[in-house]
Amino acid sequence: MAKAKNNDSGGSFFSKIFAGLMLLVTAGFAIALLVIFQAQDLSDIEGYSGSDSQSTTRDITTVLEKAIEGQYSVVITELEINRMLQEKIELKQGGYLASMVSIKSALVRLKDGYAEIIVVRDIAGVEFTGSIFVQVEQAEDREGIYTQVHLHGGPFNDSVPSLKRGGRFGKLTVPQGFIMILMPDFQKIAEALDPEVKLGFRDMARYKIEEGRLTLDPRRPTEERGMKNDVF
Image 1 (cartoon, rainbow, N blue to C red):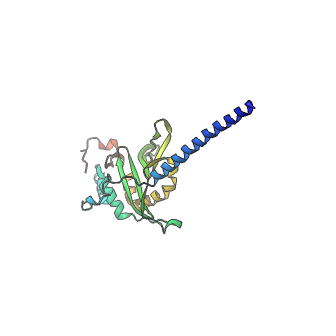
Image 2 (image 1 turned 45 degrees about the vertical axis):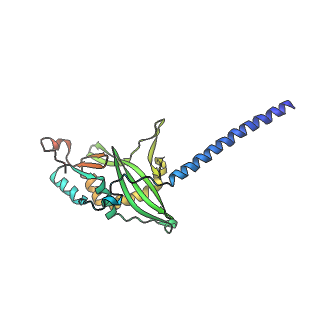
Image 3 (image 1 turned 60 degrees about the vertical axis):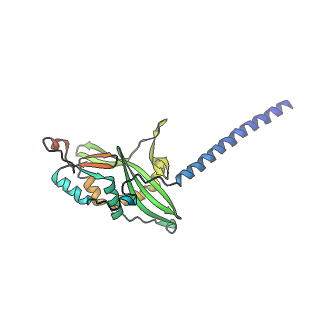
């Protein structure tokens, strides 16, 4: 009888551990959903709030063309990029959710070394944000130097350096694999800005992303020697 009692106690103990773990998983999942459906704060992005709606901005295409023609570096601000996105991009939600979901805007936040591209949606009257982190990288092969735009690839967590962050669903930062469902939207943005993308990433030799600004330079390092280093 004593032996049977011990077995029942052991089973009950492991059942409680399992139930506790399931409760923690369920609570964590619920918290994650809550954070996902809370739009990230966009008030820090230049060009998002209505307060700078009267600011004058340059025509980015013309600015890039003149910089390439004159062989000088140029600075494009976060405000100018977002003004261009508002003027040139018209995204539409397709599929079964089209009647309930609308795409309000696309935005770019420039940080040191990378950019965050954000799509803002309205889901049944509630604002939802999804974003990806990208960076510009240059490499060289036998044909010369070429430029690529990659996912940023920063560590998702310092304790797990092999797991790379990809973007954000709402306020929640997610690994790269989760943002694949957002890629069609960002491909549409790239297609809408095809002339600017070609001028900025095909014809420019060097790039620097900083807080609130993007510096582009069409001159190769060897071409810059002896030339005045003007920035416009």
